[in-house]
Length: 372
Image (cartoon, rainbow, N blue to C red; front, side, top):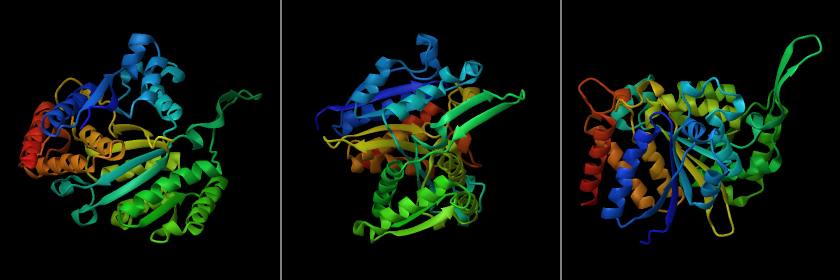
């Protein structure tokens, strides 16, 4: 297979470079064993970009991100940059990538591997076999709506303002992504908002329902609606009732983190942020682990690389159409965990605690067995 798959790697801050090293190990394995090659570029984002250039991402890096097939990011941020002005904090680099690449659909799978059922804070019978996909709208809503800011009032008080704003097209395009995913999964989709108290929620519910009602291609789907606070409760009461959840930016941020902890560790969870399909059939995309930069364990070999490796698996699936190779990585992760190998964040009694590097090496050995 030709080596024309272009990927921009942005390791970022904290444990980002450590976990990305293990992804490169798997990419090298794929080149040698699967004849699947990538044209890799590397750049800076977040705090390391601030240190080098004074801003969290440069125009040059943004141009490169727009030109490649996908971006793979490690993590951004850390206490070193906490006191910077809000507009140049490390996280603004990630937000700029999402906004300027128009990555409007954030896919957050929450799967509980059989070997990690006991790591969840919920009863095993609630999370065993769990497989949820949360689709979060990513480029509109209260995180981007105008007006926004902190303002001085005439009476000496201050006022903080954020605006929850959605248009029909912003709702429909993310709902279409969610509907398509549900058709490839178990055919159930739950749309989540706060239509009981928010006009944006009323519009959200109306537009999602209209999309469903007016398109016969979705007749095989079961659509339901739920208020966000109830959805949060249901995720910890009976999470397996859900298949695909589609929701706005703010609620998606909250609900996906709730769903993440059902699985036992943020260190296990990947994500994908997708744009629209262009005239060439290409969809801009960014893949990243859900976990943060974890500055408290940086440089100690304690980081769990599996979320980043599973994010790379999502890139193979959604950006390169290599579902078979993605399945191979997913199965290797499952087998490694079943074999009792653990990093510190998912350590359990009787298991073998290993470093970031050893986890990566063990995964490659498992890939060798599966590919034999």
